[in-house]
Length: 404
Image (cartoon, rainbow, N blue to C red; front, side, top):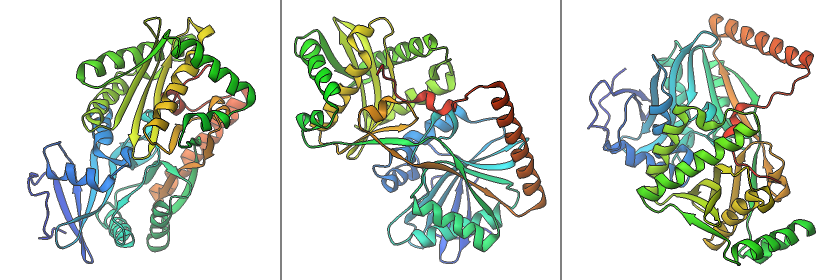
């Protein structure tokens, strides 16, 4: 039902926002959003340093990946002073296998990690209850909810799943996905090197002496629109050449992915939250990395390395240059994000358990579709085993690369 609760989304046209009152909270369903809307800055402030949960990341994704017939479903929760206290960054679409489905923005190939529902401190229980109430009463047509890229110990999402299960009868399932890998950083470069294995320690020191300190290799970093465009093209070229050589399509074979990431990079560069670096060896780009600067954490999102200079260990040049810059800039964590590539543990990164949350309403249609999905998944798994193939999730493709 519509309400007259105060809203700082007053700049929106009526077809962009619909409201629902849950107890003492006003829930709004936002179906369109631009950088000039007041909600954009409010959302940025609420997300803070959680960049994968902010509009600079998620709205470019929506513009690039929006499917015909899908609808933005950003649920905002406000108190009666009109203050934004909570937000769920979702969208709604229909699929033949899931019916009407709610999914998290940034899902799929973009591989956004550490997703959640945003809530101000001391309001979390009210926010989650209000959102659950809205979904149940205002979106009864929903047959399936899938929220991707969640840290296993995310208590906010665990509590939301519990509310949906206990109050509204939803079935909650944890779906497997690849782990993230985090590397704790000391306060200085030499201490970090000493944490490596003896052989790797020796090779890193030799690499820096022979390449960087000798002047043969240099690190360049994007700082404006022109250098961003230059560095981004280098990243695309190196990434695609490497992936193609390995027999993969490469993330940038998708125009949607390329358009999304470039717009997101532009927005984060303008906000001082992007570090796009490339390493040149004798003037030739051999490694590139696109990282997000998430507070004290550096999120190592995407990379590429040259395929014709293995002797120089381009992957090592890129990774160690990024780690050293992170340490010198006071970062406490270097996050390699999702993916099971072996080099991550070689650099002493520790796994962070992740999962996707599935919520299934207790309607006959929803439960029938769930059984069909389970049957098809079982048949697919059986076929892979019979064919003797090991399938690796495509979501890892956007991750970093290394020639360890």
